[in-house]
Image 1: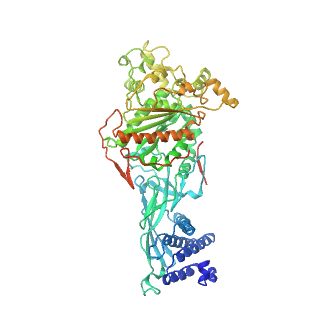
Image 2: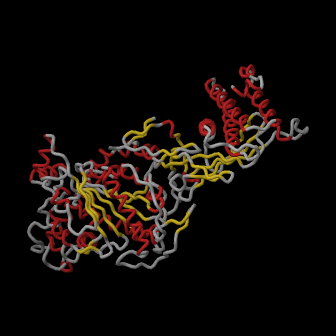
Image 3: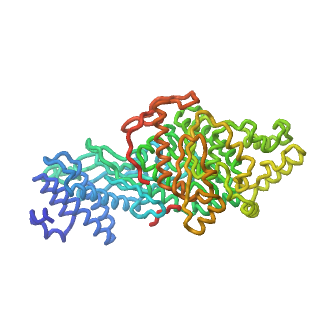
Length: 636
C-alpha cells in the first residue's frame, strides 16, 4: 500500500490485478528497486487467494506463480544496487510469501496432472511464460518411487512427543511411495504404503520475469518473455540446504509429519499387530522380517530395533523420531526394524532373526563390500533384548544340553527338522554386530511369568500345529533321548521368560564375540499407585514387569537406571539420550579402530563422501547439538 500510494496507484487495486502488476513492472524497469518486487509478490499473492476463493483456478494459478517469481527475485536477484537485507522483517515475509505462494501453485498443479518427476508445466504470469520442470533430488529414492504427494500443512501430529520442523525456503511434503516389482534388492525390505518426507523448492534458472525485459516497448513479434524454472524435490534426510545464486539457503523441512502419516494407517495399528503376533504367531509369521522406513544406504551403519513381548516396531517410533532428527546421527546411521511373532519362545525368534539378517546381507551386499554393514548396532526392548543378545554369543553345546545329554548327531529326524533344531540350538556370533543395547530386558527372567500367566498363555496363545506335530514325531522317533522337561516342551514366550526356563542360565554365561560390546538400560517405576504396588509385589522392585535384579547385568560397557515403567522405558527421554550417546561413542571408537575391535573383515575402508563433507563409519565425527528428549497419527 505504501508503494501504491507513492505512485498514485491505490485506486487501481479494484481493477485488473494483472494490469496493475504489469504497470509496477514498468515502474521497476525505469526505477529499479527491490521494494517493487516485494509489492508485486504481495499483490499477486492476495490476488491469487481471492481468485481461488472465487473458483477462478486458472487466474489463481498464474497469480501464485507470479508471487513466487517476484519473491524469488526479491531474495536472490543480484541486478539491484541494494542487496536484500536478511535482518529486515520484510526479508522473512518475502520468504513466507515464496513458501505460501509456491504451495498454492503446487496444490493447483497437483490437482491438474500431479507433480511427477520428469513432467513439465507451463505457467503464464502476466505476460511472462514460465516453463517448469520437476526433478527429484535424492540419491536414495528414484522417480519411480514417487506415487503422489500430500501437503504437510494439511495435517497435525498426534502421538509423537516431539515435532521436528525446520524453517527455511520450500514446501514440506508427504511423499507416498509406489511399490514396483522390478526394483532393486532393497525393495523387499520396504513396507507397503510407506510415506517419506520431501521438500519442494522452485529454482529460477533464467532471468526475465519482467514484461519489460526487452525495454519499455518489446520489439514487434518478440513474443512473451520466457523464464525457465525447476521444481526440485529434496530428501531432507540427505540434505537440509540448497545453494541459490551462490548463497547457501536452509530448506523448510518436516520429518515428523510424514512419519506420523505412515503410522496412522489402520494396517499398522499397534494393538492389532502386536496382539496378532502374541496370540496367533503362526499367522504373524508371514509378517516376520526386517523393515526399512528410509532408503537403504551401503554407506550408513544399520541400527536394528527389536521390539518386545506383545509389541511391534511401532513401539520404537518415539525413539526413531528423536534420533533421526539429529543431522549427525542420520548422516552416519540408518534405522531398520525387526518384526517377529512374540507368542513363540524367544530363542525360536532369535533363530529366525539370524537367518533374516544373513538373507538381508546376501540380498543387499553379497560381495561384502560395504564396511558400514559390519558395524551393526542392535537395540532391543524387553524380550527383544534377549532376541538381540542371542545374535552375538557362541552357543557351544550349552543350549543343546537344555534338550538332551546325547550328541545331536545321534538324533533321528528328517532333514528339515534337523536344520531347524540346529539353527535354534547351535550358532556362532554374527561378526557384523558390534554393539547391543538392551532396555528393560529380563536377563534372568521375570516373575510375571508365573503359574497363572503361563497357564493363561497356553490357553490363549495358539501354538502352530506344525510345531506341535513335529515335536510329537520327534519324541516318538527318539525314545529316552531327551532330558526331563526339555526346552522343546516350552510352548510360548511367556513360558520361555520364566526365571526357571532352562534357556536362561546358559544365556547368562554364554561367551559373546570378543568384538561385541553390551549396553544396558534398566527401568525403575514409582510404586505410588495400587496397580504399581501389585506389580512390584509380583515382579519385585523394578519397572513393574522386570525386577532390578533381573534387568541388571555384569560386564556391560555401560548401564543406567531410568525412572520409567516397563511399557515406557524405551520411550523415556533418558533412554533415547543414552542410545544417542552410545551411537556417538561407536563412531568415536571407529576413528581409533577403523576395522572394529576383535574381528577384521575384507572390505573397502575408504572414506565415504557426501554433500558438504565426508561421511560413513571411517570418517571423523564432528560436533553435534544436544537432542531434546503410543502410536502416532497425522490428522487432517
